[in-house]
Length: 336
Image 1 (spheres, rainbow, N blue to C red):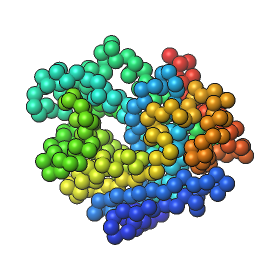
Image 2: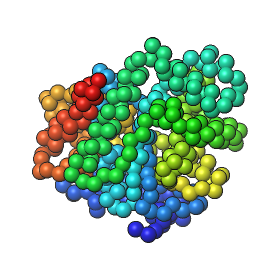
Image 3: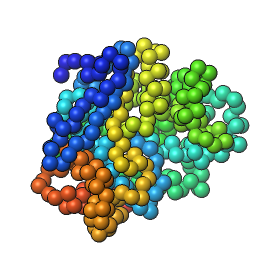
Image 4: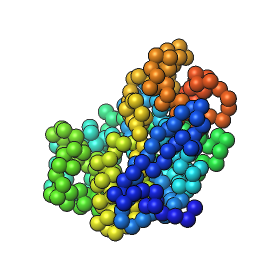
Protein backbone atom coordinates (compact mmCIF):
# COMPACT_ATOMS: atom_id res chain seq x y z
CA UNK A 1 0.00 0.00 0.00
CA UNK A 2 1.71 3.17 -1.17
CA UNK A 3 0.16 6.07 0.72
CA UNK A 4 0.69 8.14 3.85
CA UNK A 5 -1.00 7.85 7.20
CA UNK A 6 -1.73 11.55 6.89
CA UNK A 7 -4.06 10.75 3.98
CA UNK A 8 -6.28 8.91 6.46
CA UNK A 9 -6.95 12.01 8.56
CA UNK A 10 -8.52 15.41 7.99
CA UNK A 11 -6.80 18.78 7.84
CA UNK A 12 -7.19 19.25 11.58
CA UNK A 13 -4.77 16.36 12.11
CA UNK A 14 -7.19 14.15 14.03
CA UNK A 15 -10.09 11.95 13.01
CA UNK A 16 -11.62 8.57 13.68
CA UNK A 17 -9.88 6.76 10.89
CA UNK A 18 -11.13 3.19 10.73
CA UNK A 19 -14.65 1.89 11.03
CA UNK A 20 -14.21 -1.72 12.08
CA UNK A 21 -17.62 -2.67 10.74
CA UNK A 22 -16.01 -3.24 7.35
CA UNK A 23 -13.31 -5.54 8.66
CA UNK A 24 -14.85 -7.41 11.58
CA UNK A 25 -17.61 -9.99 11.17
CA UNK A 26 -20.94 -8.24 11.83
CA UNK A 27 -22.15 -11.17 13.89
CA UNK A 28 -19.49 -10.31 16.47
CA UNK A 29 -20.04 -6.55 16.50
CA UNK A 30 -17.29 -3.92 16.06
CA UNK A 31 -13.96 -3.26 17.72
CA UNK A 32 -14.63 0.46 17.57
CA UNK A 33 -12.79 3.44 16.10
CA UNK A 34 -9.27 4.81 16.14
CA UNK A 35 -7.88 8.29 16.66
CA UNK A 36 -4.68 9.35 14.92
CA UNK A 37 -2.18 12.12 15.69
CA UNK A 38 0.82 12.66 13.45
CA UNK A 39 3.77 14.99 12.96
CA UNK A 40 3.95 17.36 10.02
CA UNK A 41 6.27 14.87 8.34
CA UNK A 42 4.03 12.08 7.12
CA UNK A 43 4.47 8.41 7.97
CA UNK A 44 4.21 6.11 4.98
CA UNK A 45 2.26 2.90 5.35
CA UNK A 46 2.59 0.05 5.88
CA UNK A 47 4.72 1.09 8.86
CA UNK A 48 6.26 -0.65 11.83
CA UNK A 49 4.09 -0.19 14.93
CA UNK A 50 4.85 -0.48 18.64
CA UNK A 51 2.76 -0.85 21.76
CA UNK A 52 3.97 -0.65 25.34
CA UNK A 53 2.31 -2.76 28.04
CA UNK A 54 2.42 -1.61 31.64
CA UNK A 55 2.21 -3.33 35.00
CA UNK A 56 -0.58 -5.31 36.64
CA UNK A 57 0.00 -5.90 40.38
CA UNK A 58 -2.34 -8.90 40.62
CA UNK A 59 -1.06 -11.25 37.94
CA UNK A 60 0.44 -13.62 40.51
CA UNK A 61 -2.81 -14.03 42.44
CA UNK A 62 -5.50 -13.52 39.80
CA UNK A 63 -3.88 -14.17 36.43
CA UNK A 64 -4.04 -12.15 33.22
CA UNK A 65 -7.18 -10.43 31.96
CA UNK A 66 -8.67 -11.78 28.76
CA UNK A 67 -9.23 -8.13 27.81
CA UNK A 68 -5.57 -7.82 26.88
CA UNK A 69 -6.50 -9.59 23.65
CA UNK A 70 -8.37 -6.45 22.59
CA UNK A 71 -5.07 -4.87 21.63
CA UNK A 72 -3.88 -7.94 19.77
CA UNK A 73 -7.18 -8.01 17.89
CA UNK A 74 -6.47 -4.47 16.72
CA UNK A 75 -2.93 -5.46 15.79
CA UNK A 76 -4.20 -8.28 13.64
CA UNK A 77 -6.81 -6.07 11.96
CA UNK A 78 -4.34 -3.26 11.26
CA UNK A 79 -1.90 -5.74 9.79
CA UNK A 80 -4.59 -7.32 7.61
CA UNK A 81 -5.64 -3.84 6.42
CA UNK A 82 -2.11 -3.21 5.21
CA UNK A 83 -1.51 -0.36 7.67
CA UNK A 84 0.82 -2.12 10.10
CA UNK A 85 3.84 -3.96 8.74
CA UNK A 86 5.45 -5.37 11.89
CA UNK A 87 4.54 -5.02 15.56
CA UNK A 88 6.97 -4.48 18.43
CA UNK A 89 5.49 -5.52 21.77
CA UNK A 90 7.33 -3.49 24.40
CA UNK A 91 6.98 -5.03 27.87
CA UNK A 92 7.29 -1.99 30.14
CA UNK A 93 6.11 -3.73 33.31
CA UNK A 94 9.48 -3.07 34.96
CA UNK A 95 8.57 0.64 35.01
CA UNK A 96 6.44 -0.25 38.04
CA UNK A 97 9.56 0.27 40.15
CA UNK A 98 9.23 4.01 39.45
CA UNK A 99 6.24 4.21 41.79
CA UNK A 100 7.87 2.34 44.67
CA UNK A 101 11.57 3.26 44.48
CA UNK A 102 13.10 5.07 47.45
CA UNK A 103 12.93 8.80 46.87
CA UNK A 104 15.64 9.62 49.42
CA UNK A 105 18.14 7.45 47.54
CA UNK A 106 17.12 8.99 44.23
CA UNK A 107 17.79 12.49 45.58
CA UNK A 108 21.39 11.43 46.22
CA UNK A 109 21.91 11.38 42.44
CA UNK A 110 21.65 15.18 42.36
CA UNK A 111 19.30 17.66 40.72
CA UNK A 112 19.89 16.59 37.11
CA UNK A 113 21.26 13.05 37.10
CA UNK A 114 22.43 11.48 33.86
CA UNK A 115 20.31 8.80 32.21
CA UNK A 116 22.82 6.02 32.95
CA UNK A 117 22.76 6.85 36.68
CA UNK A 118 18.96 6.91 36.69
CA UNK A 119 18.67 3.53 34.98
CA UNK A 120 21.27 1.97 37.28
CA UNK A 121 19.33 3.30 40.27
CA UNK A 122 16.03 1.87 38.98
CA UNK A 123 17.49 -1.56 38.24
CA UNK A 124 19.11 -1.67 41.69
CA UNK A 125 15.78 -0.79 43.27
CA UNK A 126 14.04 -3.51 41.27
CA UNK A 127 16.64 -6.05 42.40
CA UNK A 128 16.00 -5.44 46.11
CA UNK A 129 14.69 -8.51 48.01
CA UNK A 130 11.54 -6.58 48.99
CA UNK A 131 10.62 -6.17 45.31
CA UNK A 132 10.23 -9.88 44.58
CA UNK A 133 6.48 -9.51 44.03
CA UNK A 134 7.06 -6.85 41.39
CA UNK A 135 9.64 -9.03 39.66
CA UNK A 136 7.26 -11.99 39.70
CA UNK A 137 4.47 -9.95 38.14
CA UNK A 138 6.86 -8.61 35.50
CA UNK A 139 7.88 -12.14 34.59
CA UNK A 140 4.25 -13.19 34.33
CA UNK A 141 3.34 -10.20 32.17
CA UNK A 142 6.05 -11.25 29.74
CA UNK A 143 4.77 -14.82 29.64
CA UNK A 144 1.20 -13.70 29.00
CA UNK A 145 2.21 -11.23 26.30
CA UNK A 146 4.17 -13.90 24.44
CA UNK A 147 1.21 -16.24 24.70
CA UNK A 148 -1.16 -13.55 23.39
CA UNK A 149 1.14 -13.10 20.39
CA UNK A 150 1.01 -16.84 19.82
CA UNK A 151 -2.79 -16.91 20.09
CA UNK A 152 -3.20 -14.21 17.46
CA UNK A 153 -0.78 -16.00 15.16
CA UNK A 154 -2.19 -19.51 15.64
CA UNK A 155 -3.73 -19.73 12.18
CA UNK A 156 -2.74 -16.40 10.69
CA UNK A 157 0.52 -14.69 9.80
CA UNK A 158 1.17 -12.26 12.64
CA UNK A 159 4.45 -10.38 12.32
CA UNK A 160 5.52 -9.31 15.82
CA UNK A 161 8.53 -9.19 18.12
CA UNK A 162 8.45 -9.22 21.94
CA UNK A 163 10.93 -6.92 23.71
CA UNK A 164 11.55 -6.85 27.46
CA UNK A 165 12.32 -3.28 28.54
CA UNK A 166 14.31 -4.53 31.54
CA UNK A 167 16.72 -6.49 29.34
CA UNK A 168 17.10 -3.53 26.99
CA UNK A 169 17.87 -1.19 29.89
CA UNK A 170 20.45 -3.62 31.26
CA UNK A 171 22.09 -4.57 27.96
CA UNK A 172 21.71 -1.82 25.35
CA UNK A 173 23.37 1.58 25.94
CA UNK A 174 21.16 2.94 23.17
CA UNK A 175 18.28 3.14 25.62
CA UNK A 176 20.24 5.41 27.97
CA UNK A 177 20.96 7.72 25.03
CA UNK A 178 17.25 7.81 24.21
CA UNK A 179 16.41 8.57 27.84
CA UNK A 180 18.92 11.44 27.87
CA UNK A 181 17.04 13.08 24.98
CA UNK A 182 13.72 12.43 26.70
CA UNK A 183 14.84 13.92 30.02
CA UNK A 184 15.98 17.12 28.31
CA UNK A 185 12.71 17.40 26.41
CA UNK A 186 10.57 16.88 29.54
CA UNK A 187 12.54 19.61 31.32
CA UNK A 188 11.54 21.95 28.50
CA UNK A 189 7.89 20.83 28.74
CA UNK A 190 7.84 21.59 32.47
CA UNK A 191 8.54 25.22 31.54
CA UNK A 192 6.40 25.56 28.40
CA UNK A 193 3.40 23.31 29.18
CA UNK A 194 3.19 22.90 32.97
CA UNK A 195 -0.52 22.05 32.83
CA UNK A 196 0.14 19.08 30.54
CA UNK A 197 2.92 17.80 32.78
CA UNK A 198 0.71 18.22 35.84
CA UNK A 199 -1.97 16.00 34.25
CA UNK A 200 0.57 13.29 33.54
CA UNK A 201 2.69 13.17 36.68
CA UNK A 202 1.28 11.17 39.63
CA UNK A 203 0.00 13.20 42.54
CA UNK A 204 2.52 11.99 45.09
CA UNK A 205 5.65 13.48 46.69
CA UNK A 206 8.04 10.78 45.47
CA UNK A 207 10.38 12.47 42.93
CA UNK A 208 11.04 9.12 41.23
CA UNK A 209 7.46 9.02 39.95
CA UNK A 210 8.25 11.89 37.59
CA UNK A 211 10.48 9.55 35.59
CA UNK A 212 7.53 7.75 34.06
CA UNK A 213 6.98 10.28 31.26
CA UNK A 214 10.63 10.42 30.14
CA UNK A 215 10.75 6.62 30.19
CA UNK A 216 7.65 6.51 27.95
CA UNK A 217 9.19 8.97 25.52
CA UNK A 218 12.53 7.16 25.62
CA UNK A 219 10.98 3.85 24.57
CA UNK A 220 9.49 5.42 21.45
CA UNK A 221 12.84 7.03 20.58
CA UNK A 222 14.67 3.75 21.13
CA UNK A 223 12.23 1.68 19.06
CA UNK A 224 12.19 4.26 16.29
CA UNK A 225 15.98 4.35 16.07
CA UNK A 226 16.53 0.61 16.58
CA UNK A 227 13.60 -0.96 14.73
CA UNK A 228 12.18 1.89 12.62
CA UNK A 229 8.92 1.74 14.60
CA UNK A 230 7.26 4.98 13.53
CA UNK A 231 3.79 4.49 15.02
CA UNK A 232 2.78 4.10 18.68
CA UNK A 233 -0.51 2.33 19.43
CA UNK A 234 -2.43 2.40 22.70
CA UNK A 235 -5.71 3.17 24.50
CA UNK A 236 -7.42 6.58 24.64
CA UNK A 237 -6.13 7.24 28.14
CA UNK A 238 -2.62 7.75 26.74
CA UNK A 239 -3.57 10.92 24.84
CA UNK A 240 -1.49 13.25 27.02
CA UNK A 241 1.55 10.98 26.71
CA UNK A 242 1.03 10.94 22.95
CA UNK A 243 0.98 14.74 22.83
CA UNK A 244 4.45 14.77 24.37
CA UNK A 245 5.73 12.06 22.02
CA UNK A 246 4.40 13.85 18.94
CA UNK A 247 5.83 17.12 20.26
CA UNK A 248 9.28 15.61 20.66
CA UNK A 249 9.25 14.34 17.08
CA UNK A 250 7.93 17.64 15.74
CA UNK A 251 10.74 19.50 17.49
CA UNK A 252 13.23 17.11 15.91
CA UNK A 253 11.55 17.18 12.48
CA UNK A 254 11.08 13.41 12.46
CA UNK A 255 8.16 11.38 11.13
CA UNK A 256 5.98 9.85 13.80
CA UNK A 257 2.33 8.99 14.48
CA UNK A 258 0.29 7.81 17.45
CA UNK A 259 -2.96 5.85 17.18
CA UNK A 260 -5.39 5.28 20.04
CA UNK A 261 -8.29 2.87 20.39
CA UNK A 262 -11.44 2.89 22.51
CA UNK A 263 -10.77 1.43 25.96
CA UNK A 264 -14.06 -0.48 26.27
CA UNK A 265 -16.23 -0.62 29.42
CA UNK A 266 -13.36 -1.49 31.77
CA UNK A 267 -9.94 -0.12 32.67
CA UNK A 268 -7.31 -0.59 29.99
CA UNK A 269 -6.76 -4.30 29.38
CA UNK A 270 -3.21 -4.42 30.74
CA UNK A 271 -4.23 -2.88 34.09
CA UNK A 272 -6.12 -4.52 36.94
CA UNK A 273 -9.92 -4.74 36.93
CA UNK A 274 -11.80 -7.29 39.02
CA UNK A 275 -14.97 -7.23 36.94
CA UNK A 276 -13.42 -8.93 33.94
CA UNK A 277 -12.63 -12.41 32.66
CA UNK A 278 -9.24 -13.53 33.91
CA UNK A 279 -7.22 -16.67 33.39
CA UNK A 280 -8.21 -17.68 36.94
CA UNK A 281 -11.95 -17.04 36.44
CA UNK A 282 -14.12 -20.17 36.96
CA UNK A 283 -16.50 -21.17 34.16
CA UNK A 284 -19.54 -20.26 36.25
CA UNK A 285 -18.24 -16.76 36.96
CA UNK A 286 -17.49 -16.18 33.27
CA UNK A 287 -21.00 -17.22 32.27
CA UNK A 288 -22.64 -15.06 34.94
CA UNK A 289 -20.53 -12.02 34.03
CA UNK A 290 -21.32 -12.29 30.33
CA UNK A 291 -25.02 -12.88 31.03
CA UNK A 292 -25.55 -9.91 33.34
CA UNK A 293 -23.25 -7.29 31.80
CA UNK A 294 -24.24 -6.48 28.23
CA UNK A 295 -21.63 -3.73 27.59
CA UNK A 296 -18.85 -6.04 28.71
CA UNK A 297 -20.35 -8.97 26.77
CA UNK A 298 -20.43 -6.90 23.58
CA UNK A 299 -16.87 -5.77 24.24
CA UNK A 300 -15.58 -9.34 24.61
CA UNK A 301 -17.51 -10.39 21.51
CA UNK A 302 -15.93 -7.57 19.49
CA UNK A 303 -12.29 -8.33 20.25
CA UNK A 304 -12.60 -12.11 20.07
CA UNK A 305 -14.18 -11.81 16.63
CA UNK A 306 -10.91 -11.09 14.88
CA UNK A 307 -8.94 -13.89 16.60
CA UNK A 308 -11.65 -16.58 16.55
CA UNK A 309 -11.17 -19.09 13.74
CA UNK A 310 -13.87 -21.63 14.69
CA UNK A 311 -17.67 -21.48 14.87
CA UNK A 312 -18.20 -21.18 18.62
CA UNK A 313 -20.81 -19.36 20.65
CA UNK A 314 -19.54 -16.47 22.75
CA UNK A 315 -19.26 -18.39 26.03
CA UNK A 316 -17.38 -21.27 24.41
CA UNK A 317 -15.08 -18.84 22.62
CA UNK A 318 -14.41 -16.91 25.82
CA UNK A 319 -13.57 -20.04 27.79
CA UNK A 320 -11.36 -21.34 24.97
CA UNK A 321 -9.25 -18.18 24.79
CA UNK A 322 -9.13 -17.90 28.59
CA UNK A 323 -7.57 -21.37 28.66
CA UNK A 324 -5.22 -20.54 25.80
CA UNK A 325 -3.98 -17.42 27.57
CA UNK A 326 -3.60 -19.38 30.83
CA UNK A 327 -1.00 -21.54 29.09
CA UNK A 328 1.43 -18.61 29.24
CA UNK A 329 1.82 -18.99 32.99
CA UNK A 330 1.82 -22.79 32.90
CA UNK A 331 4.56 -22.88 30.27
CA UNK A 332 6.64 -20.39 32.24
CA UNK A 333 6.37 -22.56 35.38
CA UNK A 334 7.49 -25.62 33.42
CA UNK A 335 10.58 -23.75 32.18
CA UNK A 336 11.39 -22.78 35.75
